[in-house]
Length: 383
Picture 1 (cartoon, one colour):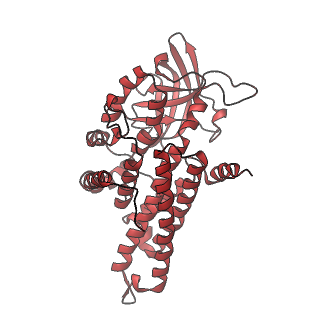
Picture 2 (cartoon, helix red, strand yellow):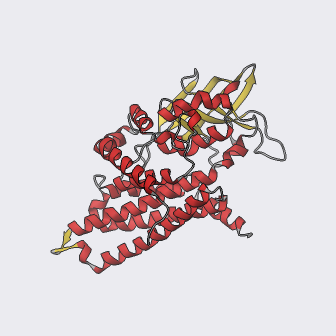
Picture 3 (tube, rainbow, N blue to C red):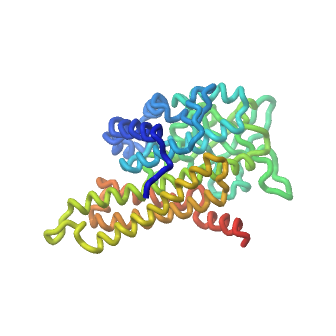
């Protein structure tokens, strides 16, 4: 079916991103996976390309675009090449909306130029050892001491945690109220070079190996009060603000991964011969690819509608939950079937399908597990 979500500007941008990936990422991607992250100067290259500032207002050094479609193009092109941009997704899709929505004018003028150029990479630290998704139960504290907060605690599973220059740390600045455990949380934008700020283990993952994930600890880290994001005590409220866009970002990556899996499988089965015939000639191969193509077409339609809704300011939390739930489940099924078509070679990391397979597993966990999303959707249904 004809796709109508993109215009000529989007397609010109796609060509730019594709050329950039071919020149700067694909030839060295294996090195990034072995290192656990891209080299630091890669993010400056992304800044020079302009991708960090697409939706940043012009007064802060960005392009001032408002559409999520450019992020969709990047997701599709990275998946097409079987690569990722490391901490790009967290920097742009998670942190940027917080800074632009809740940052003061002084903070945005201070931080956004470096954000756009890649000189200041960012990440966000919410999850703690022992608390998982229960943010209200976090133990990290930030106590006021004159014109500073004194930060103590630990975080884990922090994507982008190794190379970040500024970390949005969610901490408890006051005890929770008996009526609501979610009160008393605040967000501090912490300079990672601060005394007492420590990056612990770089966690070894089964997938997403070019994206650094780390443990963090804070021992009497002094954070200036002017680096408080928004108002004290409203952190939990702020965290829910961006969930729809965050989940749509994961959904787009998942859909794009599933489409890429089909493309890799088609190329493989056409070249690979078994019993003297191309694997593509067997009826089972045709049926499997037909099933996969149909599911991905449905996922693409859902993504396109969701992106249009987000651009119009109409994407609800339940809509985003449906998109993430469906697309991540489609990703899991399609990538698995396409790996099976590769036979034993699908298990070898030299083939992109193997990376897609290991990368896919976390999609149904982070940004809201499939079980949490089903609860949100059911609540929206009134049941």
